[in-house]
Length: 242
Image 1 (cartoon, rainbow, N blue to C red):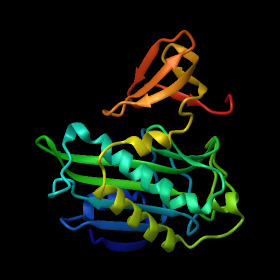
Image 2: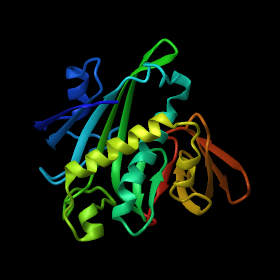
Image 3: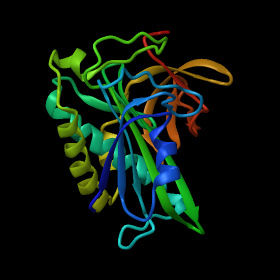
């Protein structure tokens, strides 16, 4: 699909900007700075002006032949996450992975966050706004975010943000056209098949991450062999024994 790409200097949120200014065309808005960039839930996103790639894209999954049912909306998360991994991996020696449901990690460090907001029309997704915050050329992080990292910190080089955006849009288009299953998403999962520390409403526990179900729920197997399934925000990954 062809995107109308708009560059703006500043906004509180590129997702909100698209909600107010988007139309029927596929659109991307890129901001040099977000005054209130958000992650999922109540999380904020630290980004130095002019250093990173903060943008949102508007797509219309209700259009043929790319229709997505509301019950299948996790497929959008899979497509975006895999496209980002394929975009970033050529720049990085270590493996780029997906921390469920849609953070992009290198090792135990967060490189990129995604916020997806869907508008439904009956049983289908009519509009989808995909917000992405990618740490590109920022050299240090000053907020209390526990584990951010940038491409500059990983590579020692400043990278062209426009080239990264172009590569992502190409990868996104390819993944969108070929979205047959979530196997690639699952192969790229952070901690897949490994024991890790987690926390739910009952406390902390050790478990092995075994799968993500088609509806997006996380499947863990704890130390006594019991399967545990979680929807988003029902369980937290404990990273570096924080």
